[in-house]
Image (cartoon, rainbow, N blue to C red; front, side, top):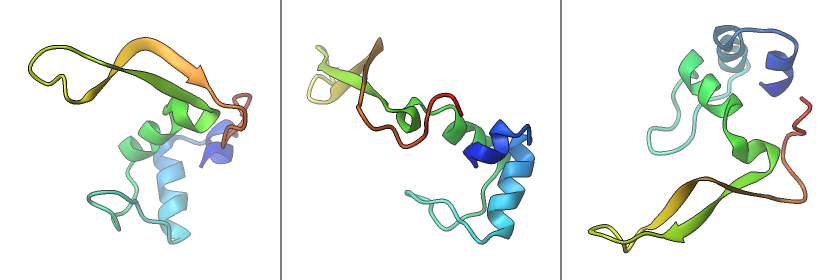
Length: 85
């Protein structure tokens, strides 16, 4: 998907290629066809270039959940996809 996008293919074209190749989505509603919106979400997810959100506990009614502070990201040493791609 990343290489196709880097070569100039649209999100819709990438989704079509993944679906034709037999790939399906994962997660709560897994085993579905890829859509252009799903592809866009994957391509813009900073996780794949090795950046992870730095979680901090918030305060208030939902303080039991770890919250992600906007703008705080940490890099990992071995990303799945090179950022240049």
